[in-house]
Image (cartoon, rainbow, N blue to C red; front, side):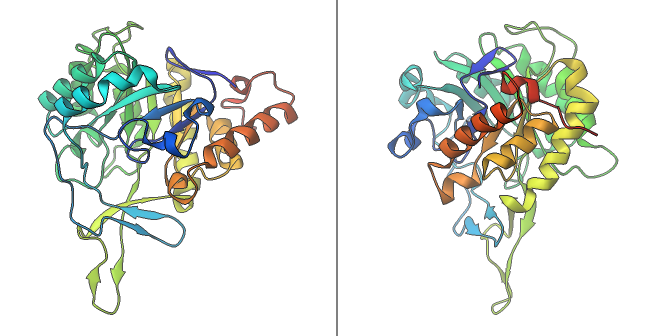
Length: 318
């Protein structure tokens, strides 16, 4: 069941996604983190952020709406308070970095990279719940610039990039994936790559809900991000496209994220081209659900006659 994400070895392909499992190890109170592959921290910014006003998390029928707004303590406090605990977490720790300028991303990424035990830094360039910063996830040129700048300061950890599922204009997710992988052409990091060591596909889909009685938006931020089962089929296609058009040839693994609630959902992601799968919304419904997904994947791998889950990555028959 072990997989390799650009040099980050996970015991199994299941990862707890950014923003859904607390800052670091809070989920350990209800979930044995030794039974999952990894955990992604809450997205951290340079300065502390209170985030958006309530309501900022709501059920949405077949999923969840959230507009938390990158609420966090800031990178200095995170490193000071949570940094010493990282090496004690019994799974791979991936630090999520967010920002509103190249300079902010560079500061946060360099700080996370310096924390002992952080295996990778994931650039969140696709949060739909804040104003500013998301342009890096919609413009290949800006994304190349950002990845190139961060690549120069992330010296010990691997570099992951979390892409947006929705891009306006003629640019598609494959073009953004290619920009993230190629960077600015200057090699760096432990793998000596010019760009991302792995890609996370993808973030939530911009959405909103309205109270038909008051005629007011239900989220204080008006709009937010939709996650959960409603986005799963779309996320599977995005993983398939990125793997087939960019990642496979470049030798870059993909983390598939979007509506993974059951082991079958995770298996779909893997067949589409995901080396690992992220779980987020499922944790709000059942914090122990990743254990069931891991068990189901183990049985599935055996039933497929495969000796390793790695053999099934991108193995969809078309």
